[in-house]
Length: 124
Image (cartoon, rainbow, N blue to C red; front, side, top):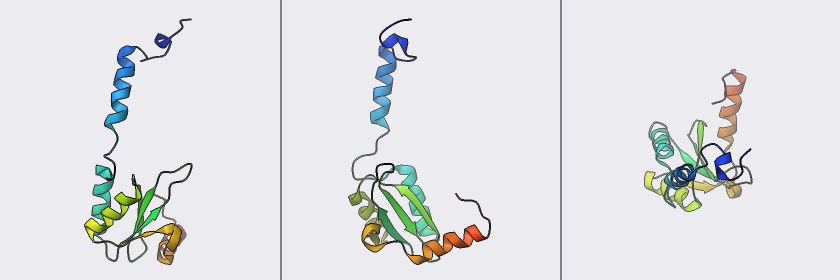
């Protein structure tokens, strides 16, 4: 058995360097949402009426998230890097954004989820 970094697969000097660069490359700029999440939110908001945003605080197991809820209760959730980014996103699209800890979830969101569950539709 060997001791040191070579004992782990890909742990040679080259492996550590690549891992370190990957770690920094995958991060979004502070105060911005990530590209794919941004695109998803924009598509959701532009194809539905009465969309509002609700920021969910970070917990020990989940990152801060933004939930977009349409007028009929349909909703989608994605991570956001900061509270400021969530509110900036809402401002950019002209959507009201609320802190869910202060306002709670809108009843239509729970009603929509209950209707889907009653219809036997799978969770997505």
